[in-house]
Length: 424
Image (cartoon, rainbow, N blue to C red; front, side, top):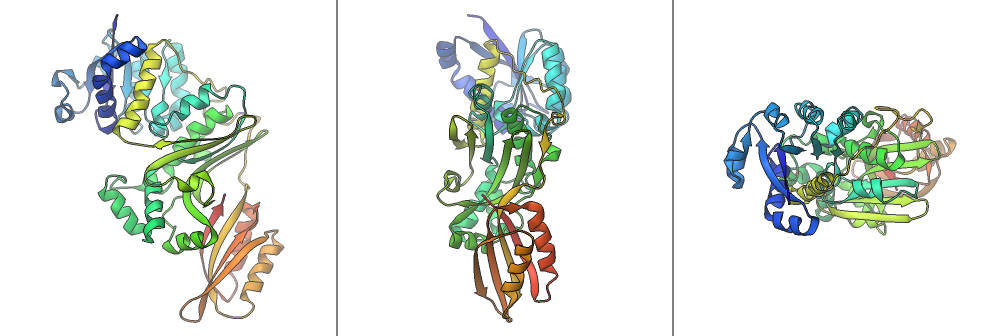
C-alpha cells in the first residue's frame, strides 16, 4: 500500500488535534479506509508547538515554498486562521497541484469564490468540512445528502462562545459581563471576543452554509448581523416568564428567488429542539421541502472534534474526490436572487415608562397603526414611579417594527426602549 504524504500549516489547537488523530488512528484508517497517511511536514513560526505536543521536531518546516515544492506532498491541511498569510499559502499549494483541507471560515467566507477556480484549474480539491460546526458533518450533508430536496430554511446555533455565555446567563441569572469573564477564563472566549460576541464568526459560517444550502453565493457582507452584548439578565428573565430561551441564531431562508440571511439574538420557544442546546455545543436545524425537519448536533469547536472533520476531508480527498461548488456569480448573489431586508418575524420589546394611566394604550396604538399586532404584554412596577412594559408581537415586518420603535421613543412618558429581540 502506497503511503500518502501530507503537510499541516499551523500547529495550534486544531492543527494539533488533526495530527493527534492521524497519528493515533493511522493503523485504523489504513485498515478501514485502505489509505496509509503520513504527516511529512508541519509549517509553523517555530518548532515549539511540535515539541509541546510531542511531535517529531524533524517535521518542522518554516517555508511555504518548501512545502509547495515538495513533490511527495499531495495534500496540505491549513489551520492557521485569519485571511493572510493563509490565503496566499493556500493559493500557492493549489497552484502546485496540492489539494487543500481548511478549517478557515473567515477566509472561505471572503475568498471562497476566488480559491475554487484555482483548485479546479490545477486538478486538485478544496475541502472545508471543519469550517462550520466543528465535528458535526453539516458541510457534507448539505453538499451530498440533499440532492433531491430544496433546503428551505437553516436555523443554526453555530458559535460555541455565545451559546456558552447565554446558557450561563440563563442558568445562573448573571449579567453578560460576568458570563463573558468566565467564558474567557475557561478558554471558550478569546481575550478580544469581538468576532464571536458581535456575530462575525456566525455570519462567516452562515455565508458558507447558506451558499451550499441555496446553491448560490451568499456574500457574508450582505448578512444582517447583531451580537449578544446588549442582552441583559432582565431579558433572560422575561424570556423565561414568557416560555422562551435566548439564543444567537444564524438564520437562512429561501422562498422561490428570495433569500433571508441574518444573525442575531432570538427568543426560541422552550419546546423547540434548539432551546435545549446549551453550553459550548452547536446545532443546525434544517427544513427541506420533502425531507422535512432535521437537526445536526454536537461539539462545535475544540481540537479533536474539529480535527475529526479535517481528517474526514483528508481521507475523502486522498480517495480521489474533488470538491467544487462552481457558483456562476462568484462573490455575489445569482442575478435572479433577491436578498430580503424587510423580513417577517415576531418581536420582543421591552420599554421603561412613567407609571401612568394610558401609557400602554398609547404604545399599543402606535404598534397597531404600523400594522404590528400584540400577542401578549407584561407590566412590572419599578422604582422612581417607573414601570417596565414587555410586549410580544405576532409576526410583523421588520421595517414596520423599527418605525414603531422610533415613534414610541418620542412619547413623553417613555423613558427608554431597553430591548428589542426577534422571536422564532
